[in-house]
Length: 278
Image (cartoon, rainbow, N blue to C red; front, side):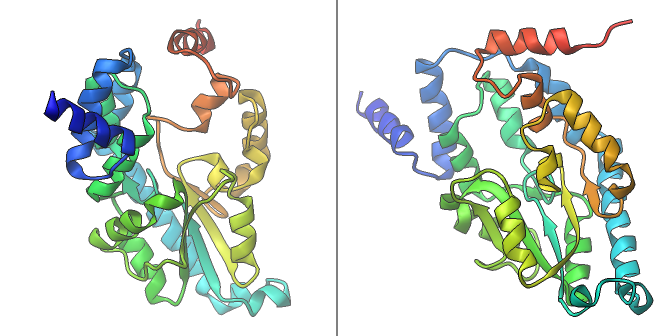
């Protein structure tokens, strides 16, 4: 009884430690209904075990380097408006599934039949065990060596900042500080943080696994509207917007649910009904 009480106290307090990650899961299993999230299994295995996923990640960062090298050419800079020519360069990147791989946390949820739980997510972050996405460290450190400021703009919560900075540094990213790791305070939209960066810098391009990482025009839109906005911006992908693959989770799935608070069975029904059949 004493050990169980301690475990429950830790889970409720949200203490972020390696032990808590497993304690919170085992405790939650006793109190919350199991979730059938087997539909995420293929997407998670694809990220963890397919050479194709790694190839797509390398491809994204190769394209990013080509675009940056082109921007570093003085001839191309002269084509920009004069006020932009004088501003220092910046690249705005998302963190999760863009530069850090959280698929082990996703896998744990699948195996334990748990949905997203904030305490477990905090605990995973506090472990500082996320690996770098293939190609991310090499490209972003190259950009830093060219005098480009990297801004890591994430919807992780502000309380996760120290662990996030530690994790980014531990996998080899250079120039990581409290100033250029910009986490969510209240608003999940990244538009305000884009604006802060643009006050001083010229953003060469954006990198992310979610359309919302690139522009506010994609936010809270239906599946059809996201398609339409993507089609409008088709010439910007690979130039202004550089996408990383993530089939495990994202706003694309929220759009299928019409951004509603649904039960797991309602979500499953929405997913099934969204399939296009012959």
